[in-house]
Structures are given as structure tokens and as C-alpha cells.
Length: 75
Image (cartoon, rainbow, N blue to C red; front, side, top):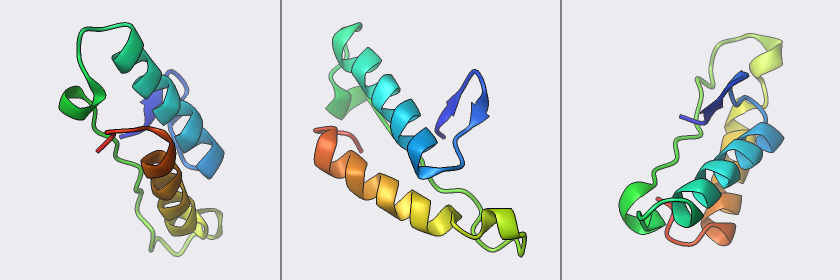
């Protein structure tokens, strides 16, 4: 999941920030290549009925598309 010190990413911007940071750390500060060591999970529950969760599915899909386009080998 896309988590950091402040908790789980809920918005598109949070997902991108956390996933990009994790990707950069794993690909530049360790011996692991992103294709072998990196996995991103960006989806949250999307049918809660709570208004503040209405954009979860859109944000997750958009973040996944951005990750595939901008973070090579991320899976």
C-alpha cells in the first residue's frame, strides 16, 4: 500500500508523492532494481457510501496510469 509516516495515501497527489518517493529510494539508494523489488498498491475501498471517499476509484486509476508512465518497471 502507499503508506508513509502520515498514513495511507487517499488522494491522487498523495499516491504519486508516496509512490514516487518509494520508487526513487528503492532504485537509487539500494542494490535492488525496481523491476525486481518494487510493488505499488494504490487502491482503497471504493464503495463505502461516504462522500469523502467518492473520488477513491478515480484517484487510484489516475495514479496507476501516472505510475506506469513515469516510473519504469514499477509493478
